[in-house]
Length: 371
Image (tube, rainbow, N blue to C red; front, side, top):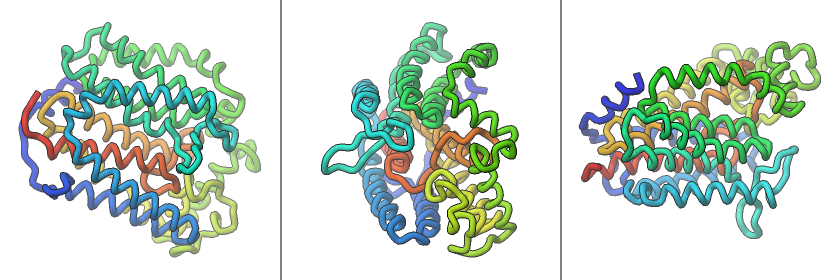
């Protein structure tokens, strides 16, 4: 299947749904703006949060426009430098980073907004792996997979040390997505899966106490309803109470009465479910699906392997981001602190998503010349 994907992405194609002067894809832009607008409507219940999110999204979209105008060949030449800078920033976080809520994840410089380098690593890692595989044999040889594993493991280990298991999982997913699209053999994939299963006891012992507790809570949150199980119980209660059409805008009781934790960030889809109901969540999922489908379609039209691997990897990372957040809120995976892309309050996470979409548009609109 992976080999077929690589071959299909080699087929030439055309697409006219773009704004030539700005190097933007119209379908992708409209879908992104629709998700941003939906998020702003949800944040409108808190004027301070709304204003902060509006400023972040405007600046983020400006960055998207700038990124989309940069030629892909420059990303190819910059890839090792960007990856190296990401590793340096992760080391700076561990040594001098700002601590909040028990995790040391941010860099806070005087006069500048606080930012989270691990989020930007979700761009730097796919960029580096696409650079590594762009002129090597496909499907990858075993030694190439070992190098790819080392490239992926370095930032993942640094992120997990912060500790930030959720972002670490997403950074790993961003690297694995590129490796998968490079056409890795299924026997290597199943072998890696078997190795992961065999290493489960070791991985379990390496988790911190609170991380182990989150996994236990996943299977039975009622065991500790006022402690570790509180978030899952309140989020599922909020979503269920919204019914089909919801209670109405700014009528969510779980968040308004502070029963729902992190209602503006990690658990914001529970607010959407309570206020807009099942229909509102379906509409948001539809918009995410349009972004994913359009992004993967543009990846198939990329003129070279670097563009195909990078664009495809970035869009699969976006999918993983959405999936982990929604599954976490619904109690399908442990609570790991992953925001909902372009909807949750915050700057660095949204910026990484918008940069990724900008790169995808750049690859599509700068298709003159093949490598």
